[in-house]
Length: 183
Image (cartoon, rainbow, N blue to C red; front, side):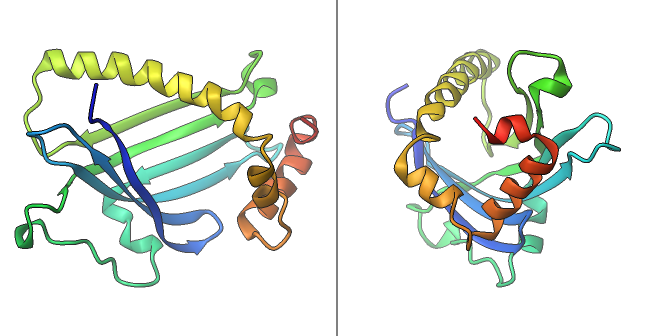
C-alpha cells in the first residue's frame, strides 16, 4: 500500500539491559493521520537449563513505557498541532523466541501477538487484508534481515565489548546456545 511505512523509530530510555522504552511513528496515506506508539520493551531471559521450555520472552506494552524511562516522557500533544501523529496503544503484547534445538524445528521458532488500538474504526475487510499482507511482509523482512547480521556495521555494534546489551546477549548465548553463537 503506497504511503504506508515506518517513518521513525527511536529509543527513549533504558532502566536496565533488558528494560527499554521506544517510540515508533508510522506514516499512513492521506486522508488518514500518521500514528505513533510509545511502548515498554521488557526482555525475560528463560534460557537457563532449569527453565522449561528454554525461551526468550519480550513483553511490549504502552501502559508501562514510563517505567522504562529514567526521565519523564515527552509525547507531543496532538491537540496543539494537527501535524502530530495520533498516539495509539499496544497492550499485553509480546514475542517469544524459541531456539530450534528446544522447539524441535529446523529454525528458530518466533511467536508474536500484538493487541493494538489504532484509535480509529477499521472495517473487517481492511483488517483481514492488512493482517494477511503484514504477516507476509514481516516474514520477508525477517528473511532479508539475515544479510544484515553479516554486515560490518552490525558486527561492529554486536561485538563491541563496551555495549552492555550485546555483551549480555553474547554471554548468554555462549552459556545456553554455544552452537548458535558459532554461526
